[in-house]
Image (cartoon, rainbow, N blue to C red):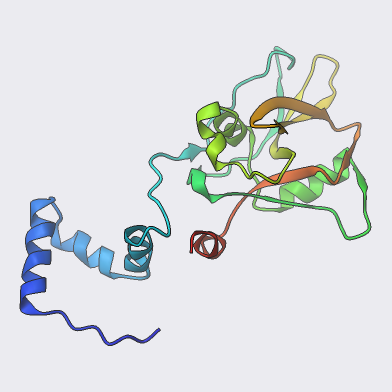
Length: 197
């Protein structure tokens, strides 16, 4: 969109006073003016998006489930950075005619996506964070952390929807996964923008 925008001297003064009153520096105003930051702020102003306070630290260590091996509970833990909780989405790793996948194949495909680990599982499993989870999905897998039990079997954790509630569970990689199992992934900013408009 190529709107011609002109600011009056009065508006410029109002903005300068507001920035100063709220502790902004000239450098911060310059940063705000770069890229599409003002477009994102406008979406919030118009009510098409909301500010999310906090983030999910997927670089930390996840909670260790009670069923996991006491000495070496984690076989693999791939860090995913610090995540805006509202960027939550799910994806399928199944091809069109596939109904089931062996556990190892499922995890291999899931880890190739921009998927999440058990730190994200710990965050989204809390009832106050269920608001970020989709309403049309039954099972959500967090594939970038693989746990082991005392027998050496490999597991991933997942959330399962039961009406209005989500409960925690795990899936043995020796079993197959069916199409109900969706992968926890990060939505791209473009997808979020479409969802919020």
